Length: 341
Image (cartoon, rainbow, N blue to C red; front, side, top):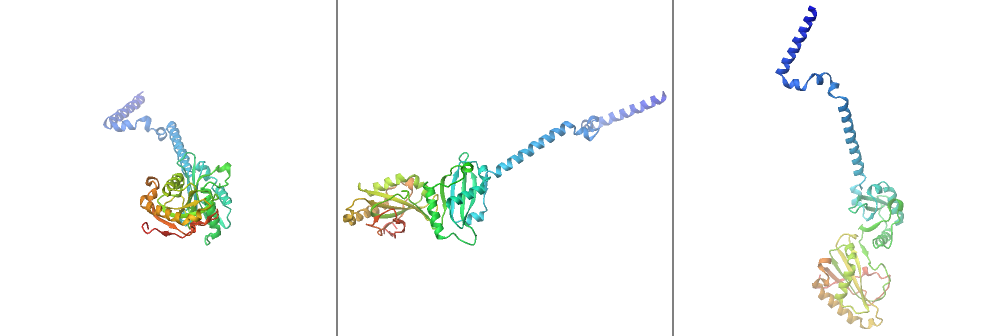
């Protein structure tokens, strides 16, 4: 009985001592109560551990979901390849960029097969998600198979013709439809030696050439193509053409681009009147005077659409020549109007 009383007394003394410590150090009592400090496992109980694991798993899955999505939305080739490629084109696919990127190799083979040139290869320069919904902007280059070689002049001539036809929608790239659909909005980004587009689409042009004159405006070929009807209408009003006369234009960019300014417009007047040759010299003088006078008035073109007309020139090389679809007007030598050069 005495032992029990002694033990009980000691326990009371211990409890009293612990209470005194708690009163002296309330912060310790608050944060390190018996139920919390009994063991480390009680601090991180099972429920906390489950919540922590689930939170980490959700965060990790979100990171892995976002990273592939970003990497598959665009592709860019090495900058050195982009700078060295002298022949570059662009078109748009009505497919998500992620779908196109996964078939990049197939796309290169399809473009190469469509162009059909030996000793060359096609390299994709970039694949970007377009501002247009569910579309991909594609930029590609045509390169020689071996880096130490260049594309032959014959191949460049054939390739230039194909690019012009693709731009004018007279030719389509033969792509795998199931993977890429139909390409649209073809543009020439870069081509050595420049590029000339005939908006007539190489239709047969016959008659007597009366005069050929050139002028430069700060537009792209693509922009002028969209305003072509307006350009021709304003030139016809300027030249005061007869019912048997018509004006035709070709568009040339020295950098070989359909999206970069400036553009040299090659305009020529054709007469279908059989007896025109008898009055050709008189008519040429009249047209030359009209052009020379109109040069100071922007050739009568709307400056808000076509900007300022520069470098008006004309040629007498083909005056009176009978035109056909094989005429090469771009090779005609030109001379400047003294008041306009």
